[in-house]
Image (cartoon, rainbow, N blue to C red; front, side):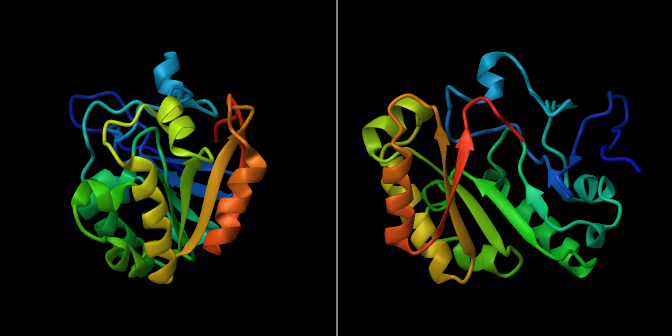
Length: 210
């Protein structure tokens, strides 16, 4: 069973990788944020012994070629060391095809800035094929969020929360996450934000990736 795709004249790159009974899809190396705690800003692109460094953006067909049988997995998750919603058209094309191939559940791990980046509410488009989103809340307030994520775009924190509301309204199951052990992050306050929005919350641990 292969979890990667070989491109002509290039070394093999990991486009799909298996963890915890799920299949994760690595479709971009670009990010909206520059999170200081991200492995790639600490000198490595490795997650759970998978090298997720990409030299270019794979096509939808290349990503699909790296998937064997999507029905085998509990979830198919768009998650690498980049922000998958930056490649919205590719993400939607792959998700639609995977659903047609029997994928049970499709999730996106995201920074929640898709609407800000694309300048429109994209959650109705996502809701056609995506069952759930895990959104990096990161912190309980904008100041702490900006310090850790080093956002390239003003208003990112409010936009992320608005995306969570819109995704829920579109019928997508939403989970907010924050990292326990990250300086200044109040996990209890982050849980309270999720509760107020009527969505789930998941605590992550500092330096535990994947």
